[in-house]
Amino acid sequence: MLQIGLTGGIGSGKTRVADLFAARGAALIDTDLLAHEITAPGGLAIAELVAAFGPGCLRADGAMDREAMRALVFADPAAKARLEAITHPLIRQLTETRAAEIRAAGRHPYLIYVVPLLVESGTWARRVDRVLVVDCSEATQVARVMARNGFTRAQVEAIMARQARRAERLACADDVVDNDGPAEALAPQVERLDRLYRGLAAGRAPV
Image 1: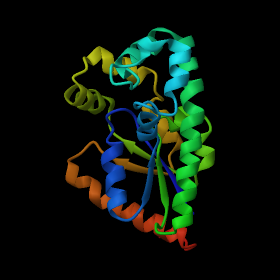
Image 2: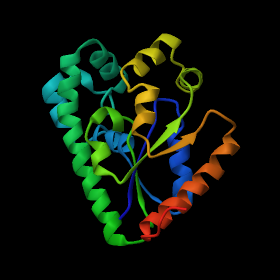
Image 3: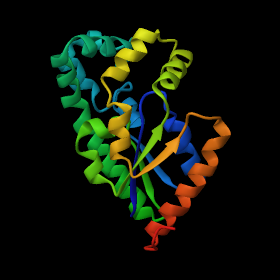
């Protein structure tokens, strides 16, 4: 099954682009959603998180306190490494399980993995057939995340500083969706790439 890795910086519009592909029949596995799943109340990571960080890492409902953990890992690289050592293997395990289920069902022409840190991981690019980058200017990223999340400019820039640079993502890209323009400019780009991916999946040469 043709496998595409979709990535982009925070605020680039990855979810919107992924949804447009799903509307055209692509299968999606979003690693961010899997991360939320394993850190939800009763999730696969909860017991290990409490063992590593204490009960204070949870909200009252039993889910991981994402704001508290975000602050902790930004301030403490060792805590970041401990968190990733717990969550990353579980996310990978779930990813592989879901992908196997999708392949077995045989209902989709190709599979898209939505991986925010695909470039940073150092391994994801080797696990997919093509890398698709959703691209926009850094100024657009900052404006979108400030409006969407209520973060300050400094908070957004701190997150971006821990992600791959725009040029690094583009250097890894086989395909690019430009999301610096109006929302209606996305659909034609996705339509073109959907035709390309369907052709590749069917063994035809790209047009």
